[in-house]
Image 1 (cartoon, protein in one colour):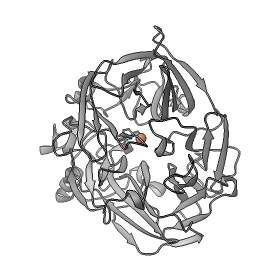
Image 2 (tube, rainbow, N blue to C red; image 1 turned 120 degrees about the vertical axis):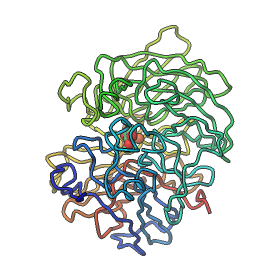
Image 3 (cartoon, helix red, strand yellow; image 1 turned 60 degrees about the horizontal axis):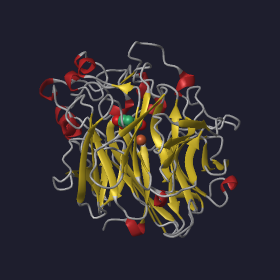
Image 4 (cartoon, rainbow, N blue to C red; image 1 turned 60 degrees about the vertical axis):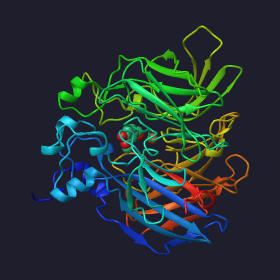
Length: 487
Ligand code: V55
Ligand code: FE
């Protein structure tokens, strides 16, 4: 079979796949890296090692590739490496793409037909350090452990068998004070099941509880939120079913007729009782975080009114609605004392659209004030061509209590990936430190890591790490300070 990317419009130009592993000793720096910045920025995303079987497949089905920027003493080393999933290795051995649509095992070739989970995952969505391990995550399979120094693949990690769900979220929540993880798997009782299994896992990796319950219907449960006392589970119209998979479609479709739900369950104890609240259609793909006081829960999230993903089409083939896909900051208040099963929603910062919401993770599960979000500021100049699209150009530190925002504009030539946050010191004040994001420079078509100081975001980046090529794609990334690094 001849390997060619010809005829794949989604894999040209900017989107030409990076098909190599790389290592750079001592990267070029513009400006000055903060001397106290000491740790590793790990990122993961997808690159098509072989072109997709179907040209309209979801980019979420591209092969996982991890990258790292290791920063210390004002200098930076870089490395990238494909995650050696069973799927990547099978394709490499066959020298062709054996897998069909995103999370549809009925569309795979030959022996791969019907295989899913560990067999067809890409480990391409998030990368975290937990219990002394570097883990690449994808919500359809268990975590994949990587070597924290070389990014070499070590294999699936299921907490020595104590985590029994076949799936593991890409967004586990780690309490910023206790280090306890709240993790879950959805489609936990097999393909297209609406079962969710929820776990607590101690900071040392010991699984301490398992609770099983059902969602009102099967939907993508990409992210959750935790407050001091509750776990919040968004369910919305990104749906699937065995029928649509057997029809040979991409895993998810958008169903406009579906209401949204937020499931609330106690964070503590063993009860699997979930109270499902209900509201109008929306997609809450990512949350900032939540807090609660006297049974009143406040949840901040980046939300769209409709389908945010053009590659997961409407179930009735309605055209993609760009306005409904626009994702902005919203605040939800849920009152556990009330018999009413609704919530109140407040739309905030409406001129700042961005989907990849973060906070200072030291405050997860506790009172917090600041949201961090990369967004597209329409009023700032753009010197590149991103296919008519205005890329994310600003990193915002949103004061969610006060309603104000401080922002860093990366510059007119840049488009930015998700923001990551590095605290100035282990006990620095909330959101005091550095923000960073991988940037495409549309003038050079190469990548740079831009870094800003949260004490003066308006001053722009304090440093940029320049790569001699366009870096592999990113979904999520995390700064891991030296004191958190596995040895
Ligand atoms: C998301 C990303 C995924 C996925 C499911 O951003 C949801 C949401 C990169 O893969 O498989
Ligand atoms: Fe995500």
